[in-house]
Length: 237
Image 1: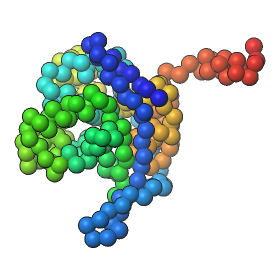
Image 2 (image 1 turned 135 degrees about the vertical axis):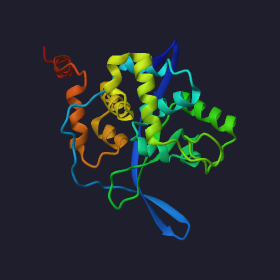
Image 3 (image 1 turned 30 degrees about the vertical axis):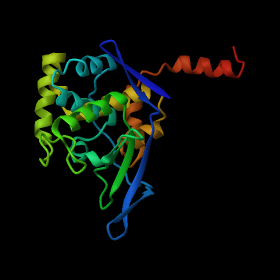
């Protein structure tokens, strides 16, 4: 499956959208192993979800002039990561060969859950350029400002959201200016692109499918068209 996002005439491809969720456990001293995680528990959204439509996402991502900020926003959108999860990512978590990132899942009590998500070529190129520009090593945080430095804070990311949402999209977007808006926007965009809701659940790192099902009411699915196509496959007119 391919999900294509057009930005300023260039094609940004999210190819083979897949996600796998594991629990990272210590099997021996200094050795870790990933085992399939079986979730439990419940905690789903009660309030209305604030999100950007696809054309708004494109406008936002295509007009951020700072390369580092652009990389940050694209990473948050592509991975649908919680801001705390994004800030934990190190260069060693990026697998350039398999084009994936290992993301530690928050909100799992007493569990060390990670999910492995596909990254686009566009985002990987941004990361490589950043790595080369700063001379980063595998132990460095992806969103640090210098080798050996700490990742930027969630507060700093919030300020950047407010800055770019308002300057690029308009003052009426100020109340949407939050990293979580990109997470919601990605979830709905994936559903609109035909990604199965079970995969969206894993991409988001939800423990309960009910958290993910909330997004269905925001997806632009044409129910009547779906019924028509289904009937056609059965030879029903």
